[in-house]
Length: 218
Ligand SMILES: O=C(CO)[C@H](O)[C@H](O)COP(=O)(O)O
Image (cartoon, rainbow, N blue to C red; front, side, top):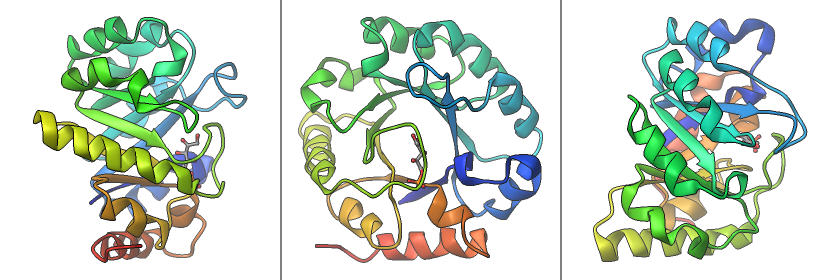
């Protein structure tokens, strides 16, 4: 399991210091919120560019924005390694994913808890990552939605059945207990914000998640 600390729960006044505390994680998850698709506002491509100088990690940019097509080039140029777009944010998901694939970034598709896997089946063959939201997007610190586990399992089944290559990422309410449940059904990347950054030692929290993921849950 790859671990992706979400800087949504980091100290925004000390991002450079905080990202260095989680350098033992494979990914850095960067939540981009536009105040429209979700209520809050967070980072633009300029922040990604500034962080890029301080980390070699995979920058996993999760675009919670309307009209995501408008932002793809700027995030790719800023140093995003993966750009994830919500299927709910555009009527043209195939076009937007094709656009990402023309940049240096890998293409990710994201689905909300209320969206079925059937909404993305036509694009599964073209994506590098599928992000299953395990909470409704918009804020950190929410409780993991148990009903999303079935979608992770379904996605793992489709991956094996068709030989797809995508990572299966989960995001929201991930801690040392819930990570076992998603690991057991095929998740390969786990995003965690509050569990990592709301603790004394974020480095240790990453290690705890990694170890917990090796133990099968219910
Ligand atoms: O995408 C997100 C919110 O929309 C966050 O990445 C997610 O909620 C992580 O926070 P936590 O681990 O505290 O649940």
